[in-house]
Image (cartoon, rainbow, N blue to C red; front, side, top):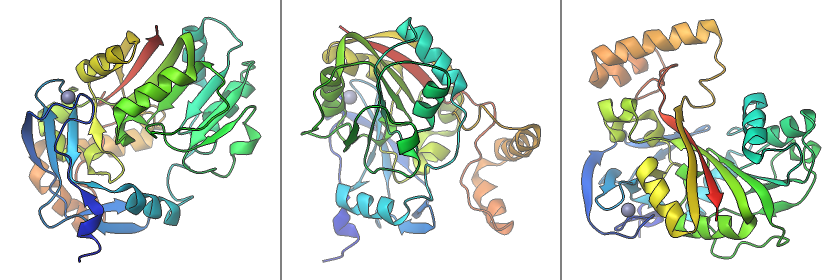
Length: 310
Ligand SMILES: [Zn+2]
């Protein structure tokens, strides 16, 4: 038995609404996924993008199975998701959403605790808890509550049972294998009337619509499985007792804090890509770089949504 191929799982139905009808959006062009210092070969028949005909969710098939992916994550611990980010703007948004300065917060995908630390520094009172697959270095400085070890879409999430006022899930929803489990857990984790703030890629935004989801830089990552837009999120949320109270498109958080030199560099790359999208990877390789598609400094290819638990 081929040990690599045996670790890829076909996805035959929409992970969000379970519909089987779908539109084939083609295969991602790359034959391997870069992850930290690794190059993970994709299966011989490639990775395809599908769009659910019922709800509009875009999803990949096949996916790496959970144990396979977890092993890669552990090998690259510290190399990924450790980039510092200034969360002052997000903390202000949390305060506006909560409508007060004291609320119990659970940050999903907390990594090194930057968001929780920013809340503490801004004087937000209340619990500051975290949920993540691993206890990343740096989390302890920011934690003032529980650490829940696991994934949001677990079928058996164990925690204190405390119900939070606000849950944040920034750059989490694209990682979900089982969105329906995730929504059920969110409902259990939140107090009635509580809010969940979500940031993730928007597959219906201009950039992926123009160049194709299969070529989107965001779809090239092994850990990104599904790609939301407003309709599937709103539908899936409604089924689980949430209403969408805010939706806006924005740039990925790494794009929102670029300096002038980085913006100039990325604009030049984006201009090149607009002229010749199919040749971009070859030119990048000639310069000793990897990349299928630059990330435009101005592309609003993400969304921030706020859901309220009924
Ligand atoms: Zn669907």
